[in-house]
Image (cartoon, rainbow, N blue to C red; front, side, top):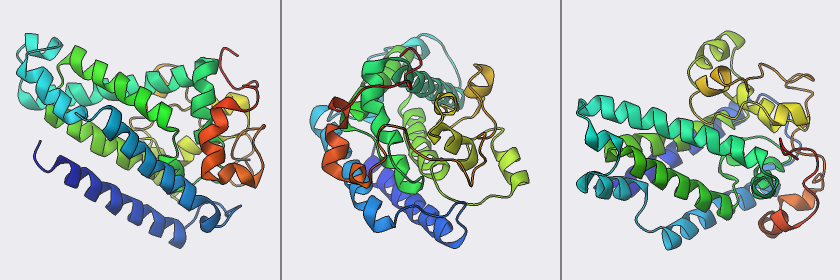
Length: 270
């Protein structure tokens, strides 16, 4: 799709800046670490992730969707639906796939080792939303490509999903204060920062809840929803038990983390 990369990059930068400003003006929690201690590695690994995906999977999700529809692959190629309905179906299906993928990364100890780097950030802010190990990003992209092929998702639906997934990940990882009434209304549809912060709690049962990144429906429908952290948002501890040292905020430590330490009690089937 023409200008896809520019559109996605432009929206990403705009949302990142907007959420960072909101955090500065109205933070939800006091910071445990200065931005300078965390942001270089978090943003650096985001850039590395993008480079790795471009090298290993150069076609990209949107281009792959165009290829699939051109060759009439997938369920949506076999049935006739209005284009806007196909776009909505693609968006919802991809969102469900990412929810299930997230549960899988918490359920299997080997995948938890890869995913836990995201959870070992010792603060919770907008840059946590881009702190993922490159191996996880590649696996996630592969799952998306398989879903796109099986569904025959239209490129417009895939582009919409990619833009909103990136934007909502930045939003729901942000350290921003929202009025409780606004939060309760917004989380009926979209995962809010207070809802997702529970997922970053050091408490195992809270870590293994609220898996949604975008739509909040899946946690409610599939029994993984938790309304609030037991300790409250201001007193809760962010992170996991085994990686509490500030050195874990360094890029190299983040990259080698899957091969260090035990899995502990966090994997659902551990």
